[in-house]
Image 1 (tube, rainbow, N blue to C red):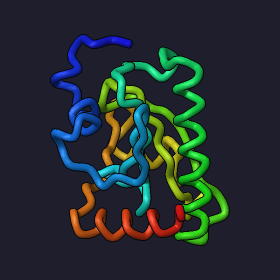
Image 2 (image 1 turned 180 degrees about the horizontal axis):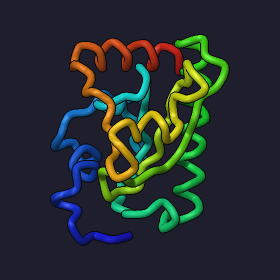
Image 3 (image 1 turned 180 degrees about the vertical axis):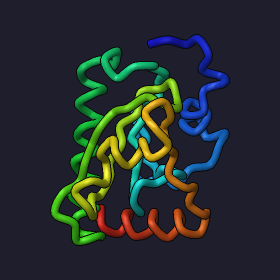
Image 4 (image 1 turned 60 degrees about the vertical axis):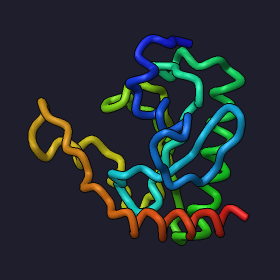
Length: 147
């Protein structure tokens, strides 16, 4: 675990409760919340509360805990959105804190590179930011589906 830069880390601040998030799951080690730039409604992130920059640096038990949470989110997303598949992946492009994306897939290309390279191969297009009201509604939908 790296402690360097954790005071400035966006996800460390969310995990500490100093920044708001639309939480879906929380325990002593991980936090799941909605992404404010969703690929699709319900797009969630699962982060370790401890600062780990790269997913390959995660202790095995913590990586397993993140995956287990992502599986529970996926089952809830399938119920909530009626989708056949849910994608789970790590990218580490914008925030240097290990985080898994969990995305309900309405289209086979929802999480392909083509969707993010519209501006060319040297740029990464960020999905539009969702409104607070939209995130609040999605969080309520997913929390209900997780019960």
